[in-house]
Image 1 (cartoon, rainbow, N blue to C red):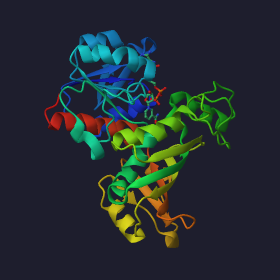
Image 2 (cartoon, protein in one colour):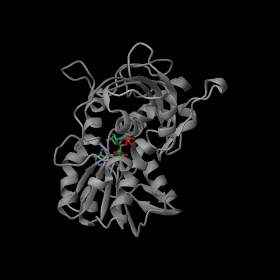
Image 3 (cartoon, helix red, strand yellow):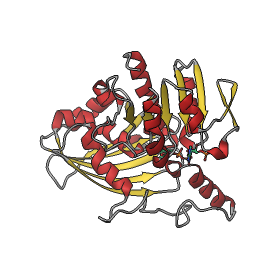
Length: 329
Ligand SMILES: NC(=O)c1ccc[n+]([C@@H]2O[C@H](COP(=O)([O-])OP(=O)(O)OC[C@H]3O[C@@H](n4cnc5c(N)ncnc54)[C@H](OP(=O)(O)O)[C@@H]3O)[C@@H](O)[C@H]2O)c1
C-alpha cells in the first residue's frame, strides 16, 4: 500500500506513525504531509527519514490510502481531491462524520458496512469512540433509552498548542494560549466551540455520532464536555438508562468479553480506570460499574481511553487494516 499521512507533524499524526509501525501495516511507500509551514521538515518512520510534502504533491502521488488528521478545513477541501484521484481517505476530523453519504466507523461495531465505493470514511470523535465501544454490547442486550455523559478530557485532545500551554503554565512561562483561560489547576466546561443551542460542538458530537454508529435513533444522549489538565486520555462519567433490566454481574461479564474493552472494577483494591494507566494503550477501560439507585434499569460507569490511540490513530489504522484484509482498497 502507498499510504499518505496528512497532518503527520501533529499530535495525532505522530501517534499515527507509531501505530502504523507497531502494527506493521503493509506500507510499500509512505508520504508524509503537513501544511506549507512544514514542507521539507524531516520525520522518521521505522528508522528511515522522510521529508514532509505539501497536499498538492501528495494528491499527485496517488496514494492507495490517505489518513487525515489535519483539521476540518483541510479535510473539507482536500479529501475530495484525494478521492477523485482514486485514494481512499480515512478522516479524523469532524468534516464528514454526519454527512449521510459517508460511513462513520468504529471497526469493532460497524466495519462490515464498508464497501469499495466508500472513498471518504469518517473516524468518530475521540470521546465518542470510547463511549460507543462500551455502550454497543450493552445496547445490543438491554436496549438503551437515554445516556447522560460528562467528560473529563485531556489537553492532548486539543493538539500540540494546548499541550504546550499546559507545559508553559507548569514551567511558569508566558506563552501562546490554546484556551481562553489557564488550564493548569483548572477545569474548563468548554471543549470546541459554542453553538446556538448553548451546547459546545464536542457535546453535540457526543449526542449525534453514537446514533449514527449504532444505526439507531431510538435512544438519546445528552453531554457536558469538560477539559482538564491531564495528559494520557479522556475520562467519562456515564449514566445509561435501558428499556430492559440488567444484572450487574452480567454487565461486567459482557464488557469483559468484548474485544477492545478491559474491565477494571474492584472498590476493595481501589481498582478503577485512570488516564495515567490508559496512556499509550489501545483498549477502552471501564470501571465503577454500579446500579443507579434513583431510577429503574439504570447504570453508572466510568470509561477511560487514550484519545490519541483508540480515540484517533488506532481506530483509523484498524479501518485501514479492514479495507486491506477485505480487498476494499
Ligand atoms: N487530539 C486528539 O485527541 C484528536 C482525536 C481525534 C481526532 N482529532 C482530530 O485530528 C486532527 C488533528 O488534531 P491534532 O490534535 O493532531 O492537532 P495538531 O497537533 O494541532 O496537528 C495539526 C496537524 O494538521 C496539520 N495542518 C494544519 N493545517 C494544515 C493545512 N492547511 N494543510 C495541511 N496540514 C495542516 C499540521 O501541520 P503543521 O505542523 O505544518 O502546522 C499538523 O500536522 C483534528 O481534525 C482533530 O479534530 C484529534
